[in-house]
Length: 323
Image (tube, rainbow, N blue to C red):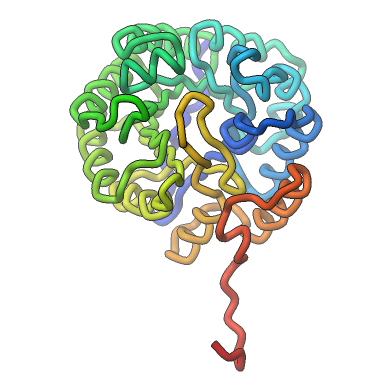
């Protein structure tokens, strides 16, 4: 079966695509298990606010990430693919995960659209996260990308810890470029650079994006940012100025990696919408609807969400209001 249409269809120069990862990356660190029906309701709300790519689940060992134990049940409960209006993504850490993703294509609703593979940029983090070194990860991801594409899924890959590792510290940009080149040669439909623990600064993002873009040619790039040190929106803008047009984010700024100490949430969807829309860059998503969904999700989880724009709201000028 031929692979489905390309993951990284290029948006217009003054527009970006938001990949909403709240149902997977956003929820995976939640201690209380979120009901399958509530995950499906969250996905539906994200679609209603305009998300066209949504990471809906991950295929991981439920003993290690209990929150994702219902991956197949969530996917089976989605609307038929032809009626969704968004592309459903499943995260795959190994070949077994890809096989589980491919098995969803037999569901009545058509299953997933994309397999999101992961290659960690350091040995220590790779062994803790996926049980494999960098070199083992390259070989594994080559097989994963080939299997996903052959089975009919768009096959994209995220280079995790591309800007810094919680165990080994600085990651040489030359290594990330080499990994990106290897994944481009392996047929990745899209390559994401992930600041998994939120250590990057804008100059670093601009530098690495430039190097990787030059190395991989026409393969679309995506950026995945965590806001551990409050720089994710600035890093997103640096990536945009460097030519990146596809951005991961999680509603409310939820998330974190179970295997990365001190890593906090993803860049908040609301903050990217505020950043881009007020800068004249269209996102196709409604900030008003995102704020309403933030309130709904905060009620579901029983606490306010980290997003600063979620707390402050949109900026509305009011004549006659004193400073």
